[in-house]
Length: 349
Image 1: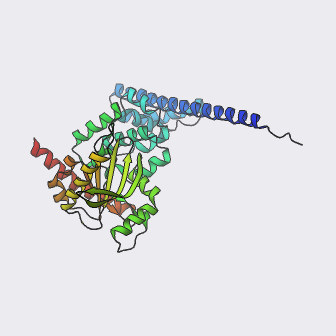
Image 2 (image 1 turned 90 degrees about the vertical axis):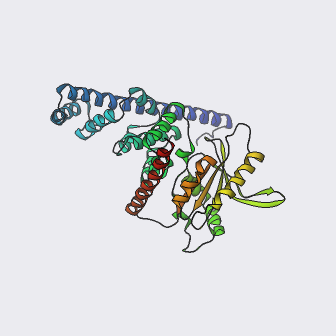
Image 3 (image 1 turned 120 degrees about the horizontal axis):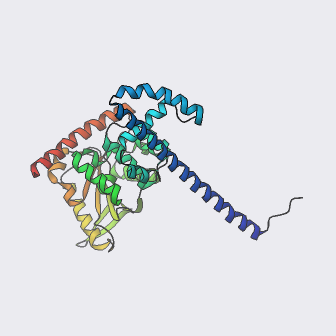
């Protein structure tokens, strides 16, 4: 008959088990980082060889032969397709120090998903967000499928301004509201009917709070619903209040079922000033407001210069859209928003 494990022995077993698991994770992270750096160095070496011969066609000639020799000597992982990825990797992420920093959190599988993206800003955004928020490969794939970059304010900014924010994220871990807030938000999981009220929307969000927070993004914590604010003896009620840990700000959320109206700005400013006076802690930045509308009025939003008041406006989508239709909608949306921002930027200069 097997001897029963005593409580002390069990505690010892659990402690040693944790040590083993932690060591395995450390070894796994170290191996992943070493492998990623190895692939970058291989790609960099091949790029130098191609550059020395001053013709791109040379790369097409040497890769099949090189791949066959490497696989014969070192086994799988060095297929022609993978060597092309390594060359692409070294070309698109040309700074070895940046690659070394990213490889602590990103595996080769992360980079395989990031490399095909069309522009530098997209690649930099997803790489830095993976590093900062420690996304798994599966999470990264979900963010890509949901077109997260296209839904952030940074994708709609002039390129130089967007680069500056991403550089601050890379060098200082400085996360700005434009990297956090999205537009539109995809709320199809709420299962709302064709007609619904603001109360219905609020109840549906509270019912699916976990999924709503996932859609808001990493770092959000729910604080309160229908927060009561007493101003001049009159009661006002804020729909939803959140806190963002990395931004170190309270986030006031107002839900609207129709188009954005200019009057919403005054209402949100009142709520933000109250929160700043009564709820803001000494180590926190000023509160930020998010007005969620079924539809935005772009020109009104642009004229009101809401950013200066720490207010964000975003549309939400409550019905499922096929990926192609969502992509088309977001591209049109991004294009018009970018034109408005560039127009504002040109007027300032």
